[in-house]
Image 1 (cartoon, rainbow, N blue to C red):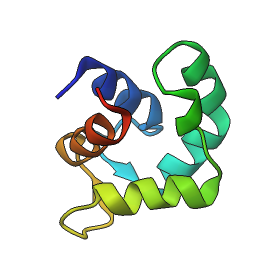
Image 2 (tube, one colour; image 1 turned 30 degrees about the horizontal axis):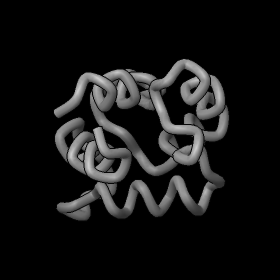
Image 3 (spheres, rainbow, N blue to C red; image 1 turned 90 degrees about the vertical axis):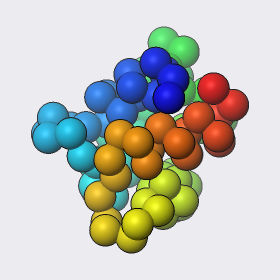
Length: 83
């Protein structure tokens, strides 16, 4: 798992509980996405609308429990962003 995935996960984990919900991913990417992209934490093309953020969540939620662990999240963003 990449260090970039860890930094991005922590930035999106708005309540710092170690898991990501769909609402957190959408809200955090909407509010923090451009700043994270400018800092190099997220590719600019990775900053999308709510539908794109929801699709990212769905792709990462391998076990279907509606929350993302760091491992689920990192596996998807490492694959998707080429990290």
